[in-house]
Length: 232
Picture: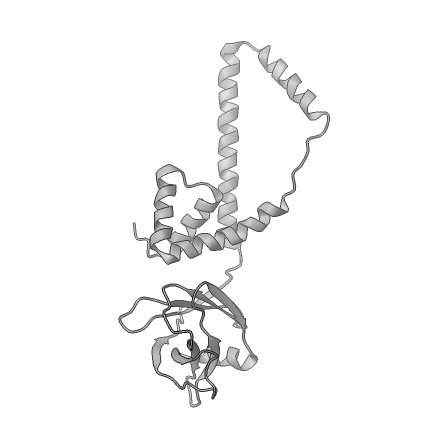
Protein backbone atom coordinates (compact mmCIF):
# COMPACT_ATOMS: atom_id res chain seq x y z
CA UNK A 1 0.00 0.00 0.00
CA UNK A 2 1.31 3.45 -0.94
CA UNK A 3 1.35 5.40 2.33
CA UNK A 4 2.76 8.51 0.62
CA UNK A 5 -0.76 9.47 -0.51
CA UNK A 6 -2.05 12.22 1.86
CA UNK A 7 -5.70 11.32 1.22
CA UNK A 8 -5.07 7.69 2.28
CA UNK A 9 -3.27 8.74 5.46
CA UNK A 10 -6.06 11.19 6.26
CA UNK A 11 -8.69 8.45 5.89
CA UNK A 12 -6.70 6.02 8.03
CA UNK A 13 -6.18 8.71 10.67
CA UNK A 14 -9.92 9.40 10.79
CA UNK A 15 -10.70 5.70 11.16
CA UNK A 16 -8.03 5.35 13.86
CA UNK A 17 -9.36 8.24 15.93
CA UNK A 18 -13.00 7.14 15.60
CA UNK A 19 -12.02 3.57 16.53
CA UNK A 20 -12.69 1.71 13.29
CA UNK A 21 -9.11 0.45 13.02
CA UNK A 22 -8.71 -2.68 15.12
CA UNK A 23 -5.90 -5.01 16.19
CA UNK A 24 -3.19 -5.34 13.49
CA UNK A 25 -4.49 -2.41 11.42
CA UNK A 26 -4.43 -0.16 14.48
CA UNK A 27 -0.92 -1.27 15.47
CA UNK A 28 0.26 -0.80 11.88
CA UNK A 29 -1.07 2.77 11.78
CA UNK A 30 0.60 3.56 15.12
CA UNK A 31 3.92 2.39 13.62
CA UNK A 32 3.26 4.65 10.63
CA UNK A 33 2.82 7.60 13.00
CA UNK A 34 6.26 6.84 14.45
CA UNK A 35 7.81 6.60 10.99
CA UNK A 36 5.94 9.21 8.92
CA UNK A 37 5.38 12.76 10.11
CA UNK A 38 2.48 13.06 7.62
CA UNK A 39 0.63 10.23 9.41
CA UNK A 40 1.20 11.73 12.85
CA UNK A 41 0.05 15.16 11.63
CA UNK A 42 -3.13 13.65 10.14
CA UNK A 43 -3.89 11.81 13.38
CA UNK A 44 -3.37 14.94 15.48
CA UNK A 45 -5.57 16.92 13.11
CA UNK A 46 -8.44 14.42 13.53
CA UNK A 47 -7.94 14.35 17.31
CA UNK A 48 -8.20 18.15 17.33
CA UNK A 49 -11.43 17.93 15.32
CA UNK A 50 -13.13 15.22 17.37
CA UNK A 51 -12.01 16.07 20.91
CA UNK A 52 -14.23 19.19 21.14
CA UNK A 53 -17.19 17.05 20.06
CA UNK A 54 -16.60 14.54 22.84
CA UNK A 55 -16.19 17.30 25.41
CA UNK A 56 -19.43 18.93 24.27
CA UNK A 57 -21.48 15.80 24.90
CA UNK A 58 -22.65 16.03 28.50
CA UNK A 59 -23.71 12.80 30.26
CA UNK A 60 -27.41 12.12 29.89
CA UNK A 61 -29.18 10.49 32.82
CA UNK A 62 -32.01 8.09 31.87
CA UNK A 63 -35.54 8.92 32.95
CA UNK A 64 -37.05 7.24 35.99
CA UNK A 65 -39.37 5.12 33.81
CA UNK A 66 -36.60 3.72 31.59
CA UNK A 67 -35.42 0.83 33.78
CA UNK A 68 -38.95 -0.46 34.49
CA UNK A 69 -39.58 -0.49 30.75
CA UNK A 70 -36.37 -2.44 30.16
CA UNK A 71 -37.30 -4.94 32.89
CA UNK A 72 -40.74 -5.45 31.37
CA UNK A 73 -39.19 -5.91 27.92
CA UNK A 74 -36.78 -8.53 29.29
CA UNK A 75 -39.59 -10.31 31.07
CA UNK A 76 -41.72 -10.39 27.94
CA UNK A 77 -38.77 -11.66 25.90
CA UNK A 78 -38.11 -14.42 28.45
CA UNK A 79 -41.66 -15.63 28.03
CA UNK A 80 -41.08 -16.30 24.34
CA UNK A 81 -39.97 -19.86 23.52
CA UNK A 82 -36.19 -20.17 23.38
CA UNK A 83 -36.17 -21.52 19.84
CA UNK A 84 -37.57 -18.28 18.50
CA UNK A 85 -36.11 -15.73 20.94
CA UNK A 86 -32.46 -16.54 20.25
CA UNK A 87 -32.58 -16.04 16.46
CA UNK A 88 -34.67 -12.92 16.97
CA UNK A 89 -32.23 -11.59 19.56
CA UNK A 90 -29.29 -12.44 17.30
CA UNK A 91 -30.91 -10.61 14.41
CA UNK A 92 -31.57 -7.64 16.67
CA UNK A 93 -27.93 -7.50 17.79
CA UNK A 94 -26.70 -7.84 14.20
CA UNK A 95 -29.00 -5.04 13.07
CA UNK A 96 -27.91 -2.83 15.97
CA UNK A 97 -24.22 -3.49 15.25
CA UNK A 98 -24.72 -2.81 11.54
CA UNK A 99 -26.57 0.42 12.30
CA UNK A 100 -23.76 1.53 14.62
CA UNK A 101 -21.10 0.85 11.98
CA UNK A 102 -23.14 2.70 9.36
CA UNK A 103 -23.54 5.67 11.69
CA UNK A 104 -19.79 5.78 12.39
CA UNK A 105 -18.99 5.42 8.70
CA UNK A 106 -21.35 8.26 7.87
CA UNK A 107 -19.74 10.39 10.56
CA UNK A 108 -16.26 9.73 9.17
CA UNK A 109 -17.49 10.32 5.65
CA UNK A 110 -19.16 13.56 6.63
CA UNK A 111 -16.11 14.84 8.46
CA UNK A 112 -13.80 13.73 5.65
CA UNK A 113 -15.86 14.88 2.68
CA UNK A 114 -18.01 17.75 3.90
CA UNK A 115 -15.91 19.27 6.65
CA UNK A 116 -14.26 22.47 5.61
CA UNK A 117 -11.13 21.89 3.56
CA UNK A 118 -9.34 23.90 6.22
CA UNK A 119 -6.14 24.43 4.25
CA UNK A 120 -5.16 24.17 0.60
CA UNK A 121 -1.60 23.12 -0.31
CA UNK A 122 0.78 25.82 -1.53
CA UNK A 123 4.25 24.26 -1.39
CA UNK A 124 6.46 21.71 0.31
CA UNK A 125 9.54 23.53 1.56
CA UNK A 126 12.61 21.37 1.16
CA UNK A 127 16.24 22.16 0.33
CA UNK A 128 17.65 20.74 -2.89
CA UNK A 129 18.24 17.00 -2.48
CA UNK A 130 17.02 17.24 1.12
CA UNK A 131 14.06 16.00 3.12
CA UNK A 132 10.94 18.20 3.41
CA UNK A 133 11.06 20.58 6.37
CA UNK A 134 7.72 22.41 6.15
CA UNK A 135 4.37 22.21 4.42
CA UNK A 136 2.90 25.58 3.44
CA UNK A 137 -0.88 25.84 3.09
CA UNK A 138 -3.37 28.67 2.70
CA UNK A 139 -7.02 29.20 3.51
CA UNK A 140 -9.57 29.08 0.69
CA UNK A 141 -9.74 32.87 0.45
CA UNK A 142 -5.97 33.26 0.76
CA UNK A 143 -6.23 35.44 3.87
CA UNK A 144 -4.32 33.03 6.15
CA UNK A 145 -1.42 30.61 5.86
CA UNK A 146 -0.69 27.50 7.84
CA UNK A 147 2.86 26.16 8.21
CA UNK A 148 3.43 22.60 9.45
CA UNK A 149 6.84 21.31 10.42
CA UNK A 150 7.61 18.02 8.67
CA UNK A 151 11.21 17.30 9.64
CA UNK A 152 13.97 18.15 12.06
CA UNK A 153 14.82 21.86 11.84
CA UNK A 154 18.40 22.42 13.00
CA UNK A 155 19.67 25.96 13.39
CA UNK A 156 21.46 27.92 16.10
CA UNK A 157 19.43 30.03 18.50
CA UNK A 158 20.98 33.16 16.96
CA UNK A 159 19.47 32.41 13.56
CA UNK A 160 16.06 31.79 12.06
CA UNK A 161 14.46 30.68 8.80
CA UNK A 162 12.34 33.31 7.08
CA UNK A 163 9.77 32.68 4.36
CA UNK A 164 9.50 34.95 1.32
CA UNK A 165 7.11 35.48 -1.56
CA UNK A 166 8.97 35.85 -4.86
CA UNK A 167 6.71 38.12 -6.95
CA UNK A 168 5.87 36.85 -10.43
CA UNK A 169 6.62 40.30 -11.86
CA UNK A 170 9.12 43.01 -10.96
CA UNK A 171 9.56 43.75 -7.29
CA UNK A 172 11.42 42.65 -4.20
CA UNK A 173 10.71 39.53 -2.14
CA UNK A 174 8.03 40.04 0.51
CA UNK A 175 8.33 38.35 3.88
CA UNK A 176 5.70 35.92 5.16
CA UNK A 177 7.38 35.75 8.55
CA UNK A 178 9.59 33.31 10.39
CA UNK A 179 9.20 29.56 10.02
CA UNK A 180 8.56 27.38 13.10
CA UNK A 181 11.23 25.03 14.42
CA UNK A 182 8.59 22.48 15.40
CA UNK A 183 4.82 22.02 15.39
CA UNK A 184 2.69 24.32 13.33
CA UNK A 185 1.52 27.91 13.22
CA UNK A 186 -1.19 29.92 11.53
CA UNK A 187 -0.68 33.46 10.37
CA UNK A 188 -3.09 36.05 8.97
CA UNK A 189 -1.83 37.88 5.92
CA UNK A 190 -2.06 41.53 5.05
CA UNK A 191 -3.94 42.40 1.89
CA UNK A 192 -0.63 43.00 0.12
CA UNK A 193 0.76 39.62 1.19
CA UNK A 194 -2.47 37.88 0.20
CA UNK A 195 -2.52 39.43 -3.28
CA UNK A 196 1.15 38.72 -3.94
CA UNK A 197 0.94 35.12 -2.72
CA UNK A 198 -2.08 34.36 -4.90
CA UNK A 199 -0.23 35.69 -7.96
CA UNK A 200 3.27 34.38 -7.16
CA UNK A 201 4.89 31.34 -8.74
CA UNK A 202 7.60 30.70 -6.16
CA UNK A 203 8.40 31.07 -2.47
CA UNK A 204 11.84 31.06 -0.88
CA UNK A 205 13.47 30.54 2.52
CA UNK A 206 16.52 32.41 3.76
CA UNK A 207 18.62 32.21 6.91
CA UNK A 208 18.27 35.40 8.96
CA UNK A 209 19.04 36.69 12.46
CA UNK A 210 16.90 35.30 15.28
CA UNK A 211 14.23 37.99 14.93
CA UNK A 212 14.20 37.96 11.16
CA UNK A 213 15.64 40.17 8.48
CA UNK A 214 16.51 43.65 9.81
CA UNK A 215 16.08 45.22 6.38
CA UNK A 216 12.83 43.73 5.11
CA UNK A 217 14.76 41.86 2.43
CA UNK A 218 16.74 38.60 2.54
CA UNK A 219 20.15 39.25 4.11
CA UNK A 220 21.43 35.68 4.56
CA UNK A 221 21.80 32.76 2.18
CA UNK A 222 18.66 31.60 0.37
CA UNK A 223 18.50 27.87 1.09
CA UNK A 224 15.14 26.95 -0.47
CA UNK A 225 13.34 28.08 -3.62
CA UNK A 226 10.27 26.06 -4.61
CA UNK A 227 7.35 26.52 -7.00
CA UNK A 228 3.84 27.18 -5.74
CA UNK A 229 1.29 24.46 -6.44
CA UNK A 230 -1.39 25.59 -8.84
CA UNK A 231 -3.46 22.40 -9.11
CA UNK A 232 -5.34 22.96 -5.87
